[in-house]
Image 1 (cartoon, rainbow, N blue to C red):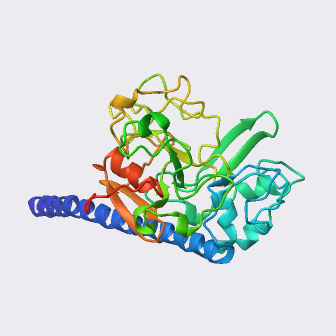
Image 2: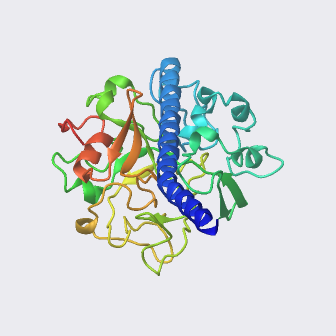
Image 3: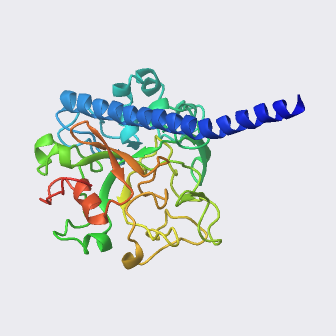
Length: 331
C-alpha cells in the first residue's frame, strides 16, 4: 500500500542519514592514513639520502656559485636552484622524473628546456588526499620566464622561526636557520642535538594554490579574497617553498605580512594576536584538512598527529634542532 511504501522510504532515508557520517569518517581515516604514509615515504627518502651523502638534504638550494658544503657530488657549482623535494626525487622512486630535468637550467625555464613540462607533473606522494581538488597546479608569472604552470605540494619544510616570535620564547632560538633542514647546506644527524624524535622534518601546509583560513575557502577578511603570492605558492620544484613559523591570528587569519603573503593587501597580524600554531591559515603556515590536527614527520622517520591545541612554544621546540627545550609528554 501507499502507506507501507512511505514507511519503507522513511526507514531507508533514516538509514542513509545514519550511514553517511560513518562512511565519511571511514573515508577521512583512510585519507589520513594515506597522508601519514606519504610523510613516511618522505622520511625514508630523506634517510636514504642521509645514508648516501652523510647528512639530511638542504631545505632548498639557491646558491648557483658554490656546491653544497662537503657535498661536491650532490649539486655541483653552477647548477640551478631547486627545492628539497626536487633534490629527493630519486629517493622517491622518481628517478625518471629527475632525469627529465636539465639541471643546468632553472626549474621555470620554458622550451626548448624540458623543465617546464617536468614541473607540471603531479607527484602522488606530495599530495594529501584530504585536501580538496585533487591534482592541483599553480600558475605564476615571471618577468624572466613568463607564465609558469607547476604541480603543487601539500608538504613543506619549516626551516626557521620568525624573529618576533622567537623573541617571545624561552629559550630564544633566534631567527636564524634553527631547524633540521637549512638552505644550501646539509645537516648531519649528530647536529640534531635535541634528538631526532623531538625535531620536525616535514609538515603539512595543504590546499595550495587556494587560500584557506580556519576551514573556510578564501580569506576571513573581504580585503584578501584570492591567494596571489610572489612565490610559487606550493609548486613542488620551487626552491622558495620552505616556510617560517609565524603563528596566526584566528580572528583574521592573518600571519606575518611579507612579500609572500596574500595580496592585496598583505594580511598581517601583530605577534601578540598570532596565538594559533596550526590550522589557522595555509598561507605559509602548518595547515591540514584532518579533523582536529595535522600530520608531521619527525627526523627519526616517525609520523605524529599534532592537535589543533598545540601551542606556539611547543611547535617551535619541535622545529628547532639544538635549542635544548624540554617537551611535554603529551601535545
